[in-house]
Length: 265
Image 1 (cartoon, rainbow, N blue to C red):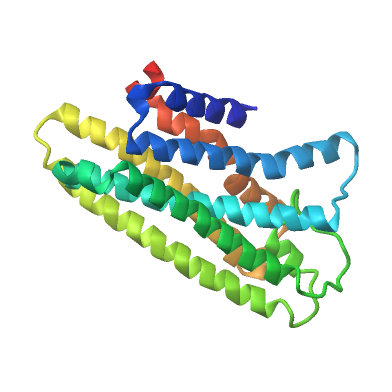
Image 2 (image 1 turned 180 degrees about the vertical axis):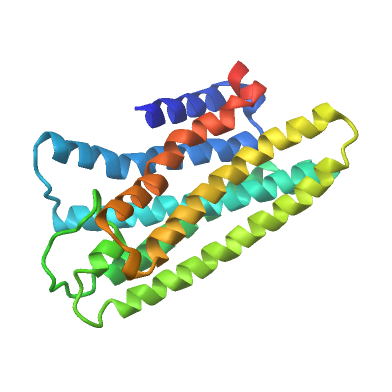
C-alpha cells in the first residue's frame, strides 16, 4: 500500500504540475510506473495465497511472473542508468543540457530502457521455460524466481540459462560501472561549486539515486550469483524481499524527501 500510494502520488504530481515537465521528472515518472509494476507482480499473488491458505500458481502464471519480473526490473535498471547520465549532463555540462536532453532525446532514452527490459525478459523467459523440469513442482519462494526454477530442472539443462544469467550480470555490471563513473564526475564537479547551497542541492538529488542503485544491484547480484553452499530458504526470502519489495516502497520517499519542487507539487 505504501508503494502504491507513494508512486501513485509521484505520477499524479508530475503529470499534473507543468513546472515538473522536465527531463529529470519525466524519468522519475517512468521509474514510478516501473515500480508500480514490480510491486504488483509479486506481492498481490503472495497475499492472495496467504489469505486462501494455498501455495498454488499455474504454469502460465509462473511464466508470466518471470517475464514481467525480468521486463520491469531490467527496464528499471536501464532507466536508472539513463537517470545517472541525465544528472551527469545537468551538473557537468549545464550549458549543453537543453540541447543534449531535448524532449525527443528523453523519449528515445526512456523507450530504449523499456525495450531493453522487454527483450531481456523475452530471452530469459523463453530459455527458462524451454527446459524440462524433472525435480518436482515446488518453487521455494514467494514468487516464481529463476534460481528456484533452475533447481527443478534436469541435470545439465540449466547450464544454458545459468550462462545467460552470467551474461546479463556482465551487462548489469557494465551499467553499474557507467553509473559510478558518472557520479565520480558529478561529485568532482559538485565539490568545485562555490556556494554551499548549490553543493547541497546537487548532493540531495544525486546521493538518493546512488543509494537506490546500490541497494538494487547488490541484492540482485547476490541473490542470483551466490554460491549454493550458502543458500538457505530464509536467506533467499530476505534477498528476494530486498530487491522486489523494498526499492519500489522506498524510491518515492528517497526521491521526494529532500526535493522541494516535488513536495510543493
